[in-house]
Amino acid sequence: MKPVNIVMVGHVDHGKSTLIGRLLYDTNSLPEEKIKEIEETCKALGRDIEFAYITDALEEERENNITIDTTQIFFKSKRDYVIVDAPGHKEFLKNMVTGASYADIGVLIVDAEEGIKEQTKRHAYILKILGIEKIIVVVNKMDKVNYSEKRFLEIKETIEEYLSSIGLIATYIPVSAYYGDNVAKKSGKMEWYLGDTFLEVLDKIKIERKEFDFRFAIQDIYKGIYLGNIMSGEIKEGEEVKVYPSNKAVKINEIFYGNKKLKEARAPLSVGLVFDGEINAERGDIICKSEPKIKKEIEAIVLCLVDEIREGEKYKFLCATQEIEGIVEKIVEKIDVETLERKYDEKLKENEIGKVKISLEKPIVMEDFNSLPELGRFAIAKEGKLIAGGRI
Ligand code: GDP
Image (cartoon, rainbow, N blue to C red; front, side):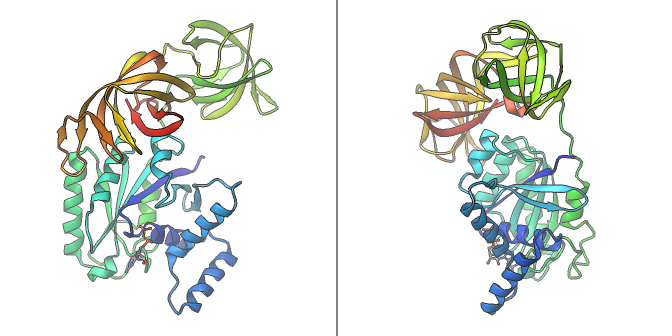
């Protein structure tokens, strides 16, 4: 079984690092030396073990060792989990929006004392546009509000109101990440809470990975082998497929996974394909078994990451390995994530979200985001710089 991917979001200082550190500690997911080292550092500073240090220490290690995957932290409960993005990580939004990282479950952390903040809403909205439907709201730092049920319910109500207005449903848990209440162990201080601990909630969430027809994006061609990623579906040796946009039908002669020859392969997997005859395809072409959706005009939700997206300007649009020039014809509306008001603007600035009409110079293969995220989202670049991400 592939590990379940989790993304942790929430306003700065609401306790993301601490919750991750606590999780790793309580699930014994850290090497003993690491724990000793952290305990000693904390002792030397004359304080209790600071769980945020664990996350920071891991982060530092990753930064010092460029060969390690930069954004993943593993832990184990009834199944394996990966935290696909570290809190405060500068690349967080970029990775999520462009699909460099993918999450099955979104955890939104809110400080029980401070309550809902601008970033809380923004992050919730982003979970929504990324299509993450399994949401856990951790109301953290319950120790700072005397483990008060009233305060928990107040916060729950406010967040619930916001989430339901954007079409999200969540599970709410009162937690103290610092003291470990309701993270892996049931708290003795919140008798009024009859629900599951954070870890139990995680373990119970059903992950359904949607199936979709065979789609393969050509990344590279090497000595007649077409290298790329099977984004969805499966393929067998000898099967007939079609190359888009050329519409050419071909037969698959061989499937390679590294040096190994496979009779069949299924998503997600990077493989090399050898065809029966010349197919004249190039990087960016998409190979399918069923008819794909091909578009030149797209309407999408766009999140601007840096600089701005301006009506009438030319950009490069990147979807899987496809790279196509196009124009932002119209910014239909800009969405205020706090009030959910929508109004027209000729541009989207950093952090702004809007609905946008794009017209492309050449047709692009794109599927509905909800059916196949890999072909339903795209990045927007200008002069080689990534500026925004979008989904149709
Ligand atoms: P992040 O910015 O969301 O990653 O937040 P951190 O995990 O770095 O936490 C910010 C501060 O809040 C740190 O000083 C933590 O020790 C503190 N903190 C985190 N969780 C709790 C908690 O459950 N109770 C208390 N009292 N403090 C906490």
